[in-house]
Length: 206
Figure 1 (cartoon, helix red, strand yellow):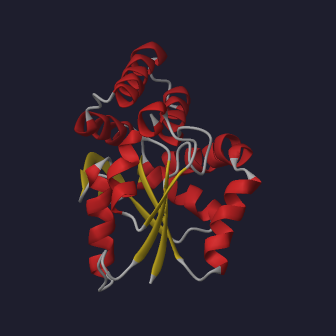
Figure 2 (cartoon, one colour; figure 1 turned 90 degrees about the vertical axis):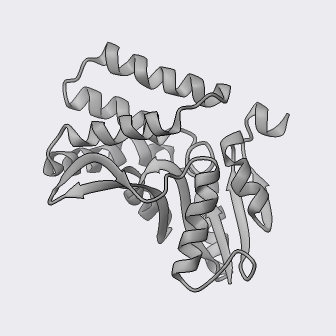
């Protein structure tokens, strides 16, 4: 089996979908823009500095979802994709994904952004499988927690390994082509059969 693995932010999309979504929810939900904006910026700073608090960031993202009813979030999600995602989808990125589809490769999005945000984005690219942080649900409401493995750094490798195992496959019997841009993608790039750096950040290509 051939498996094409795509990071999302600054790989397929030229934006950070998680931060863009966070600012969008803060605005739509009438939350304090200064307080929440400061937290978002601090996480972004530590991400690029290599001191990123993965668990703290995932909790922040999950708690933001838990503040609002699911039906309201679903309406916002559609608006978010229309206004903040589609305008940034580039023909080159669509062509890259399509080139793997035409070869018969399995396609998977592997991203630290949570699955609620990225699943509709994956559909825009025609990517069937989403390997991402999975928000925990209780009935129709997000709880503020998450289930399973997070998808940052080594977590991406674990998540892909778990997904392969669920299909009766392993890393060793799968040809993997991985696209990533960040030092945080390095564990997955190193594990892939064919790593491809796209728009690499300074620490990844330095």
